[in-house]
Structures are given as structure tokens and as C-alpha cells.
Image 1: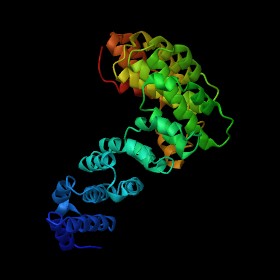
Image 2: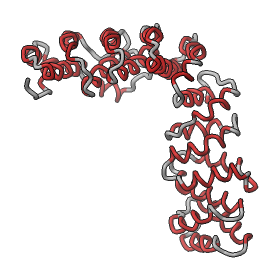
Image 3: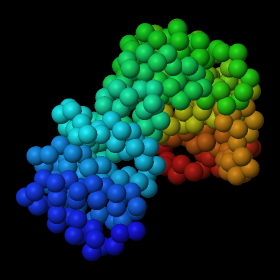
Image 4: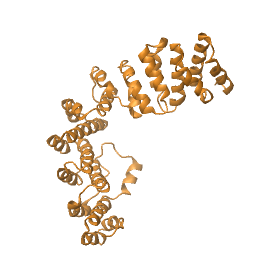
Length: 364
């Protein structure tokens, strides 16, 4: 591996008056970065080289900066694709995207978003690079049209990327693709890993329906026969409840789902109710309903979209649905000035209910 002195020497050559010397220096620093040498001593010189008059110097300086910043973030496949797409100095637009991303490298979502249109031109080869950027928070929505030209299929890398891109688009764009999303949700697929596809597709469609005011579709998804679909829907309905939209319908669906046969659905519903209360949703009129639900509530370790491992099951046993709902009901009782309900909860025969209610030490 190159040492600090070699890195600094190459950095000094980046400012040489001879283009060939600068070209060699930029290429050398790119190589050193790939060999895990630290480029910290020459960061300023590389940033200056992003505006060099020679296109390939700009490209190699940008790649060196990205390698140095991103190599431990699982983003080397992204840089490899960029290297392929910008060989030979690259056209002006591609070079500009690369150098802009290199200047933003510390902010991966922003830097990644700049690169998405460039990488979209390389599909299907660049699918893994785009998936990695999406995983780091970059908006891959601008690649949606290019992805759809590849006919994405469920449970494939391209299908995963399509869901990621759709998740960053407007609700109307999601609803326009409801047929495909429904098909993915309802596919006759026994592999438990396919439930992740169902969950993501359902979450996208249910949120879009709620944001667009399509209550019928959102209710339908919340009552779907597949547990993974219902689990995703409960998350979307809980967000709607916390935001003050369709509260009556949301309360009814979430309360029913709190006793679902699938543990993942129960957990999403109970936690969703509790988060909405904690967020300040105006649910004081439902305080008795939550209080009555609390003694019956129980988290289950079976029926999850992603099967729980031993550690996760152990964590789940340390949680209590009864206590969570009792705390939420007690919070609502305090807000309503309902001292009678608060006393009932704190003195409840079910110790988990009493414990949860007592966690709220405010008085009416």
C-alpha cells in the first residue's frame, strides 16, 4: 500500500502545468485510494482538480475522492459502475454529474441523487449500484421510467429497485401502478421471503390511497388475506391516524388488528395506536376503547413478515401490549381530565395494565 509521502507527492503533481503529469497523478491517486491509502493529506488538491481543464483529470480526481469516502460504506459497486460509464473522460453531462457527486461525497443521499440519472442509462447492468444508493437514502425516483423499460419482476434486483423508486414518487404515480402492485401482493408464492415484496408493495399502495383520499382501497388493503399485507397497511393507517386523517376509520381498523392472528400485524397495530397518542393525536374520545382493549392485548412471536430469530423473540417477550395500550389510555385520560379512568387503570387487576398506566405519572 502506498505511504503518506507517496500520496503527498502525487497530490503536488496535480497542480503541474503539464497536462500529462496531472493525468498521471490523478490516475495514481485513484489507484492508491483503491489500495486503501488515505487521501486525507491531498483532499484539497483533489477538490481543485475537479475543475481541471482536462476531462480525464476531473474524472480520476472525482473517482479517487469517492473511493476514499465511500469504500467502507458498501458503495464500491457504485464507483465501479461510474468508472465504466465515464471512461475516456466522459461526455460533459456525465462528467459534471460525477464531479458534483464527488464534491458532495460526505452527503451520500445528495451525492447519490446526482448520480441516479447517469446510472439509469446503464441499466440493467447498473441495477446493483442503484440499489445500493437507494439503501443509503438516495432518491432513485428519477430512474423509474428507465427501470420500467426493463420489465421489473417481483423478488428480483430490478423489482426491488422499482419499489424503491416508486417509494419516492407522488401518490398518483403509485396509484397509476396499482394493478401491478396488487398483482405482486396477491401472487401465489409460498416462499416466506416473498412476504417482503408483499409488505413493501402494500405499504406503498396503502399510503398512496390514504394520501389521495381513497378510503375504500386503503380499507381493502388493511383487510387483505395475506398477513404481510395487513401488517404494512397497519403502519400506513397508523401514520394517517397520527396525522389526523380518517381517524374514525383508522381507530376501528387498528383496534381490530390489535387482536389479529398474526403477530406482526398485532405489533404494528398496537404500536401504531400508541405512537399516535404519543404524537398528540386527538383521541381522547377513544380512551375507554383503548382501556378496554388493553387487558386482552398480547404480542405474539408467530406470524411476522420477517421470522423472528432467538434474540428478537427474547426482546419481544420483554414487551407488553397490555402495558403499552394502558399507558396510551392513561395519557388520554390525563388529557381529558378523566380521573376515574386513570384510577381504574392504575388499580387494574391485570398487573401489566396497572404497570403501563402507572408509567404515566401525570395527574388529571
